[in-house]
Image (cartoon, one colour):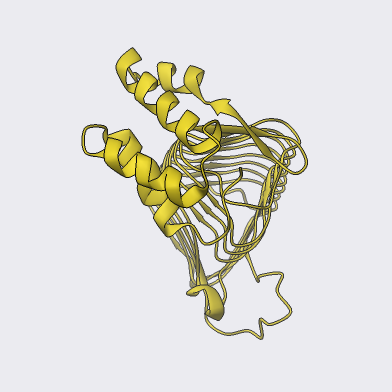
Amino acid sequence: MIHPSAVIDPAARLGNNVSVGAYSVIGADVEIGDDTWIGPHVVIEGPTRIGRENKIWQFASIGAAPQDKKFHGESSRLEIGDRNVIREFVTFNRGTEDGGGVTRIGNDNWLMAYVHLAHDCIVGNNVIFANAASLAGHVTVDDWVILGGFTLVHQFCQVGAHAFTSMGSIINRDVPPYVTVAGSFAEPKGINSEGLKRRGFDSERILSIRRAYKTLYKSGLPLAEAREELARASSEAPDVKLMLDFIDRSQRSLVR
C-alpha cells in the first residue's frame, strides 16, 4: 500500500493499512493512524500527528513550518484527529511558541481544495471549509461551522459553533455561535436556521436562538446590556448559554 516512489523517513510511524501514493514525502517525527489514505504528491512534515481514517488528497502540504517571521525553528507541532477529508492543495502549518506550540484540527471535518490553516489555529469537529477558505494565525473555529468559499478570517478571531459564512466573507471580528455573516467586512445576516434544522434542532430551540439573536443584533442595546438580557434567558436555554459563554471569552469585538 506504499507506492515505491514515495519517500518515507525511517523515523516516521505509520499505522495499519496506511496507503501512501506516488511521489509523496513523509518526514521524520510524523505519526499516521490506521486506515489513513495519503494520495500522490503529498508532503507531510513533522512533528505532526494524524489520526485514523483520514483522506489526504494530492498536492496537500501538511505540517510545514509556520509562516511567521518570529518563528526561528523552535519546537512546535500539528495535530489532526480522525476521519477528516483534506482535499487538493490544502496547507496546514505547525504552531508557534507564542501560540502554545500547536495547530490542532479535530474529527470528521471536510476541508476543500486550497484551504489554508495558519499557525496556532484550533479547529473543532464536523466543520466544512469550502474552497480557498483561509484562517490567519491564532484563529479558533468551533464545532459544526461552515465557511463559504474564499472566506478569510483575520488572526486571533473566533468563530462560534454552528456559525455560517457566505462566500467571500472577510471576518475581522468574532462571530458568535449560530450566526450567519456575509460581506467585506462581514456583517450579521440572521441565524443559521437551515443548518440547525439539518442537525436536528427542533423549532423551540431554533426560536430561542432567534430571540437571542434579536436581543444581540436587533434590539439596539449596547453589548453589555444585551449580554445581561441573554444572561437572564440562559438559565432555561442551553443554546443561549453557549452564546453567552462565547461573548464572555471573546477577545475581539463581536461582528455587530
